[in-house]
Length: 360
Image (tube, rainbow, N blue to C red; front, side, top):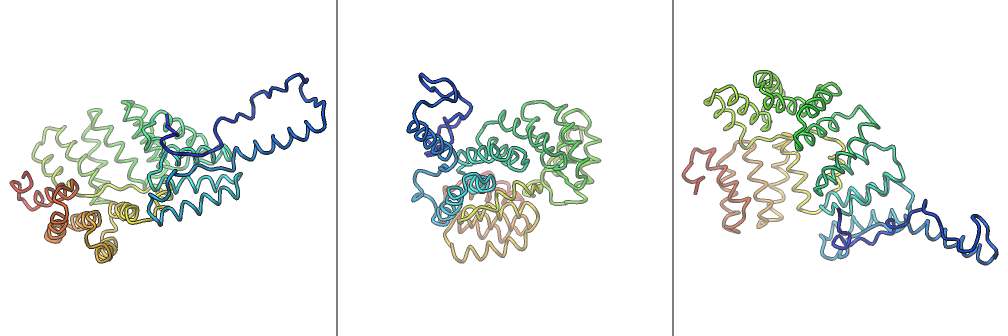
């Protein structure tokens, strides 16, 4: 489902089937009449084998990519050229592409890595993430199924399976996946939150609330759990409690640790991808340290609306509405039509009880 022409790949790994019969025209299998022909065919066979692994895909125009990103791509791309049979080199290249939204190229490299090391669950997992990002949910679920054959000890694989099953309406199987996640790692809150979601949908909001209150006791700033508390109260018919819970959940984070996904994000370089990493840390609750880094970025990039918006998010996480509003005013002056700025302004005004301002 990937248009390789649009992606601009130059991979030599497609279209060569080493298992296909060779048309040795006029000769029985395994017989060569001419020594010269035999040597020629041996050379061609070696070249074909080498070309199937030695030319990894790359963007058609690296000049249009951020300079730091282009340098990193060159580095890891050359590592694959130097070691075309190394599955780790292919996976690292895939991770770099994936971290910089070159996801079609990432999928191709992940697949090559799985061909070289078919029993590595991490590579299959990251391939599944890339396929899901590309809008290939069936392929993503198949890759994730492969992960769960190879390892039964990684809880995020189970709760992610639950989420993806919910996307296609398979609530019973999703519930089983979430429950399995809670058994594999009871400390991983994502499995519990997913289970609560299924229980609410299945008409068991009281059981869901018991789970969600335990989650919020561990992670009071978890916005996903807060929103689900509101949904559970609404299912119980308590609209006032639902309204309070849903209001409190607005603006809070909802990050769940996933080491294999974070390994991909760690490959990010450049300002945009640094902001994405900082965003993940905000969701994880590392607010004060992230604010320090964002203020430093603000000094070096004073008119970068993305930096200003992320800084406002940090202040919203801290519930410092005055600082968030001040930063957003600057962002609005720079670009009054930026969607993220308007949304953050509305959110800040809502939390400040300025509903007319938020609506406007």
